[in-house]
Image (cartoon, rainbow, N blue to C red; front, side):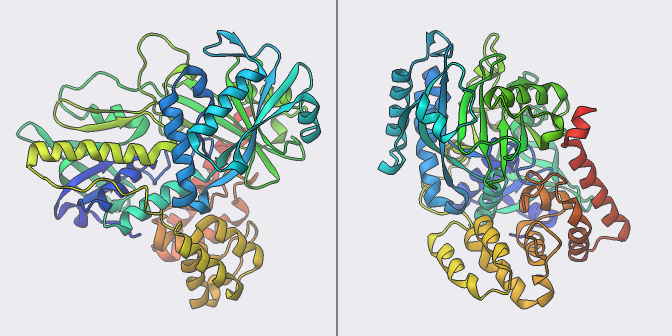
Length: 552
């Protein structure tokens, strides 16, 4: 995957120009490219940097939405969750969850007291919607059995629970693998390319003014149809259209904290209600088995969308949940490994609703001058959102340009980059002969799937690429792959959205940041001053998401 220059993007008229490189924009670009359309994808920061690397890191059906009778959303999400086992098996990790039921819990819009038979019925519907194999069907657990498998749980008022399955994932890598798949299918993509205005022909949006934030170059990118997939920034792009002033979005902030399992001894993900306000919260053992993360908050957000971090109020809320879940742990700020915060691009509801009550359904709408917008939704349904917005774009292309006979979506049959079963098997067979430590190879196989072979080739071509870069199971070949094949342009890109070290280590990888910056600097021709600035920018980002900054 190579970053397209402005000269590449300004030298033609695309069928589709997609603004916003999160999971939805990436999915739309992949879908359109696989249909044979000429596609350009722009992202003003890094791919997935806004919302799609800051979720609860799940492919899930949304069990809690059954309580609100959003059956269509849950069925769609359950089916997509199962589909990811075929499209991206290296990023789809089934894990057991336990829906805890305590005395006083209520369901169905808080109308009814929650009971074990009611939960059993809901989980049966969940199983039916997903069509999952027999070994992943739910079962009900009484209090005694629950406390046998999770002995540290709060026993007071515990009635029992439902044992079921959802999937853990790496949301940033899912977004990147989707962008890479789009490029493999023929799309052109560029991160750090900001849209500064929309251009029109005969009163209809026909492209965008853009600036390359790396080189400083400017240009106009033309397209028959422009699609706005910018998530929380949807209104910002809409307001570039003449006469558009009404807000469509009402973003909410979600925060997560990370704890060590030795401080918070939990072995299964649990689904429970906050003791403060009854909101649903999940403590979840991470893919790294030594850690547990807890999320999420859900509060309306009106501050800067470009710098979203946890506040003391957010952290206090989640620590309260932690100490209610396992009363004996007594966790506080000093136990926090790290935090992250992101925004949900929720469509503005009618009337006054609590943030947690706003629907996660997505909406597709056309602005007065032809800008096509999509907002809402969730990570699990990104593929669906992608093909549905492309379906609508094709309707507009037929209406306005007479383009006929375009094929239907095939994204449900084509694996993401790194997800092809044959490629993963070849990577596993290749691994024993690769001159890298076993623990490094294991991590790279899980992280990159079939694309492990490309990292192995880099390691084999140059002995220096096999060298360890301090801790975290990092080698120089991974850094080279991130720059050469995944469009990593900053140190923050690498640690946060390529190697995923930022989330799961107390120092965010700062112990190896100089080595990584040195490797990237050689590849990207940074001056010493630029390299130092990259290191400092990442230091500041880590500090903003660690407990010292939040506490103070």
